[in-house]
Amino acid sequence: MLSLYFGDMENVMHGPSWFRFNYRPEWFEDEFVQEMLKDVDKSKYVGGELIQSDVLGPIPPERLSGGVQTLISIYEKPELVFNATSCGENCAKWLLKIGEKQDVEVNLRYFMPFDGCESFEIRIVNEDKVISDMDEYTQVAIRYV
Image (cartoon, rainbow, N blue to C red; front, side, top):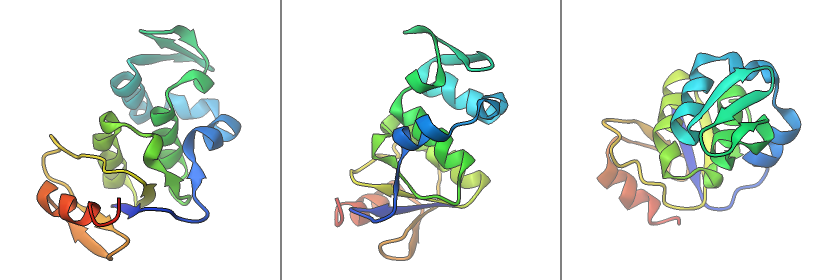
């Protein structure tokens, strides 16, 4: 399940910084990671450390967007807590998909809309409450951000 903590939080990793120093090339062989790359960054994994971006051309993993770097970090290291504030709205559905695969906790310091996401379950750590719709999510989130 995806767990969110709103507001400042200690001992949280900055996704892009952590990713740049810790990613492993084999992570990109995972089909789920490749789907995130394609959807969020319009990029395709070619092999090794080569990614083909529709916008930037051939790039190394370090040139991926901060959002994708953070999503990959969350997915590959679910035991760590990452600040997902570098993730834009186009990452929301991927946070939910990661949460369907494994338990993860992320820190958010802004209101990330989950509009268009069919049904979901998110645990709000601040209140130890599970919510399942946008109205309830909005009511809780605006208290903290």
